[in-house]
Amino acid sequence: MVHFVGFNRQFIYVGFNWFKYPGDDRILRVLFGQVKGVTMTENKTKLTGESVESYISSIEDPSRRKDCKALTRLMSDATQQKPKMWGKTIVGFGSYHYKYSSGREGDSCLTGFSSRKNDISIYLVERFPGKVDLLSKLGKYKLGKGCLYIHQLSDVDRDILSQIVAGAVAERNRIYN
Image (cartoon, rainbow, N blue to C red; front, side, top):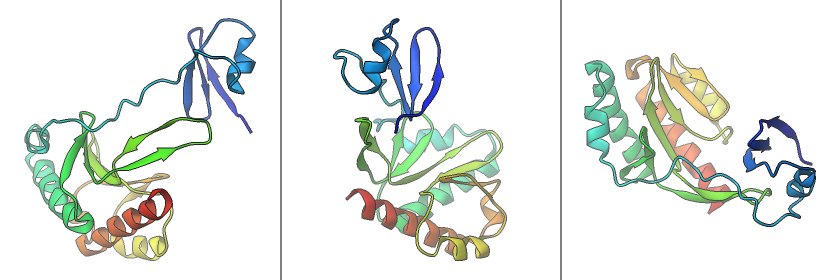
């Protein structure tokens, strides 16, 4: 089922994909894959050769910078992966290839984090076995669909966070690898 979500004069957003709008009724055929030459936008978040150390060093708040260094070690240990930059602000660990039923495909990190204005965003998966129980023991956090938001690392139990990261990576590997 196709869900029409948004539109402007140049693009149409369907599902999780932006399409170039051809400007006429061909858009219905685009939605069903019947028009050639209409492409989906490219992913902005890609593996880069940028330095994780440089990114972390650029974090202005010394406490946040220290937390991000510690989180890098924690996530590297939990995933057995070296940290790499994905886009300009995501420190990612491991990678996987995804392909949606819409045809959109790409690569992303198995898990990662980013220092944002108010919190540190930790990128996980929406569900995995034991997640609810682990979250009940974690400490102070906010939860999004596939993200965990913490204000500072001292607000959470690091051992539990490590288990959550490992569980999320195991689930993503189960689904995609």
